[in-house]
Length: 77
Image 1 (cartoon, rainbow, N blue to C red):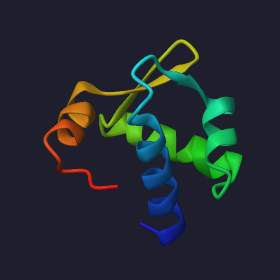
Image 2: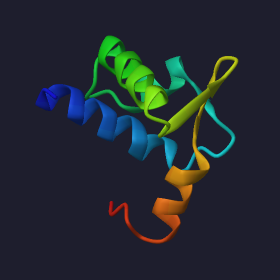
Image 3: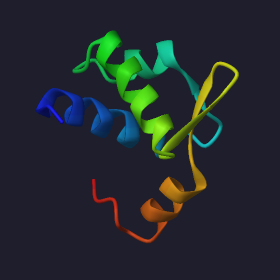
Image 4: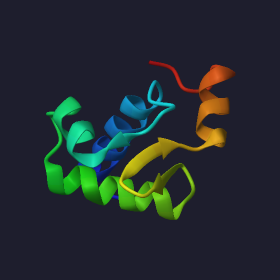
């Protein structure tokens, strides 16, 4: 995976960790300015495909698995 894609996915994951109520893509992109809107959208799609995040209607959420990894300290910020 290209480094730019990895950085985009990392930025999406880190931003979603405190968004249990979900966030729309536009607001997510506004929060992670270091990643282009296209890359952020592609990152969300990729993360949905592997079960790291989920989308319900227009909202993007962390999955319970991602929240658990964060809670047990496996995601270090």
